Length: 109
Length: 109
Image (cartoon, rainbow over all chains, first blue to last red; front, side, top):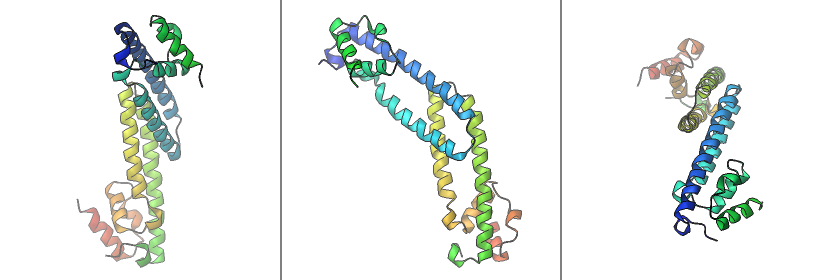
C-alpha cells in the first residue's frame, strides 16, 4: 500500500495536507472549547492534576497524529475520518485508489 | 541544625504539621482560582500547551514541597513563609529556638 509522501501524486499530497490542516484546526478548537468549559468547573486540586494528565495525553496524541512532514498517509486520514475530524466527502478529489484505501481503513477497528 | 521529625518535640511536630496543612490548602486553593480564571481566557492551542507546562511545573513544585512525612522541617516552613503561604505569627507556638531558625532562614535569599 502506498503510504508515504514520496509515492503520492502532487495533487494527492496537496489534498492530504489541506485535509490535515482542516482537521487540526477542528480538533484543537474543540479542545480549547472543552478546556475553557472544564477548567471553569474545577474546584478541587485533584481535578487540577487530572486536567494536567488529560492535557499531557491530548498533546501526545495530537503531536503524534498531525505530522505535516508526512501528511500523505492513508492511515492518518482514515484515523481522522473515524474520529470525525474529517469526512470522506472532504477527500473526494483524491485519486480514486487512494480514496478507496482510506475508506477501507475507516471500516477497520 | 535540627531539621527532621525525629529530633523535634511532639508539640513542634504537631504545629509544623498543622502549618503545612494550612499552607497546602491556601496554595492549592489559589492555584484552582488561578486556573479557573486563566483557562477561561485561553483561545489558542499554544496557550493550552503553555497551561499544561505550567500545571506540570506547579505539580512538581507542590508535590515536592508538601511532604507530610517530613513536615517538621525548618527549611520547608521558612520557604512557605517566604512564599507568603504562612506567616511567622502562625508559628508562634513553636519552641523559641526552632522558631528563631525558621525566622533566620526566611531572611536568606
